[in-house]
Amino acid sequence: MDGAFPTTQDDSTDPASTGGAGFATPREFGAFNWVGLKTLYMREVRRFMKVGTQTLLAPVVSALLFMVIFKLAFPGRGDVNGVPFGDFIAPGIVMMAILNNAFQNSSSSMTIAKVQGNTVDFLMPPLSALELTVGFLAGAATRGILVGAVTMVAIGLMGAADISIHSIPAVIYYSVIASFFMAAVGLLGGIWAEKFDHLAAITNFVILPLSMLSGTFYPISVFVEPFQTLSHFNPFFHLIDGFRYAFTGAVEGELLVGAAVSFGVTLALSVTCWLVLRSGYRLKA
Image 1 (cartoon, one colour):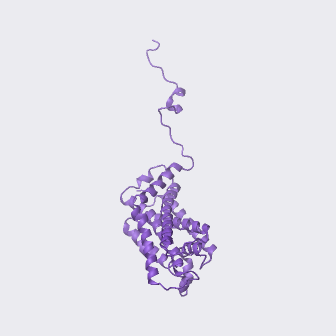
Image 2 (cartoon, helix red, strand yellow):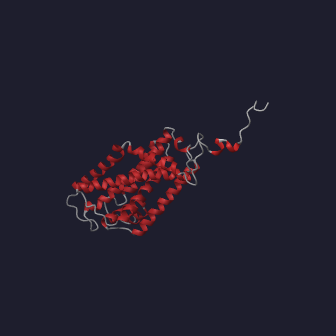
Image 3 (cartoon, one colour):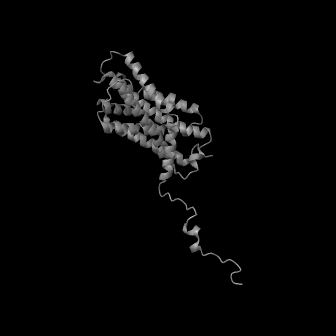
């Protein structure tokens, strides 16, 4: 009874085995999942762009208010380290905006995901710890750099300070390093924090004192010893000092030492983020 029963199809002609039309084939990611990384990065960027009034406009307005207050409070203030007072404090205010917004983006993103139970959104996809680290840090750094750029332009348009650039490489370097530095701090803080009170504690008892005592609005030469020497161990000081040099050409510390310290601390924090994400600390049950 030839033909009474269907014959078995040869595997070599099976569309499923040959990847023919109508059958999905697994995506090959290679050593690095660029598609997943781009998706995570765009998710982080869109997250803060959706509420731009809060995440972009509000920090710029706050920075401009700082400039106005200082200009009104010290109308006859002379030069500081050979730099007009307004030109001296403007880079410090801009750097503060960069640091604060980079921290807020990564820390709030991680904390909100944990509080709402949405960590599965980035733990389930085929993303390695390195890809998660790069995605979160790059997204937060983008917000920090964007806020800093808009703030500096706004200060210039307002006429509160001269924003002519002394060194373009220094502007780029310190903007990027500062953004990734605080993005890493924020990511680690978000992973550690179990509620928003914990993030507030980091901001109020660690970040705020270190940033306010780093020469943001004044030269560190006003400090008496040993506080003046201790200021050189504050990474915030090196970031602000280097960024101020980029616009004014004036520097209080050793520029190359500050650049090296900033890079080393940022690299160490980024590697720590990768190690913590790889371990699943406070992320996986």
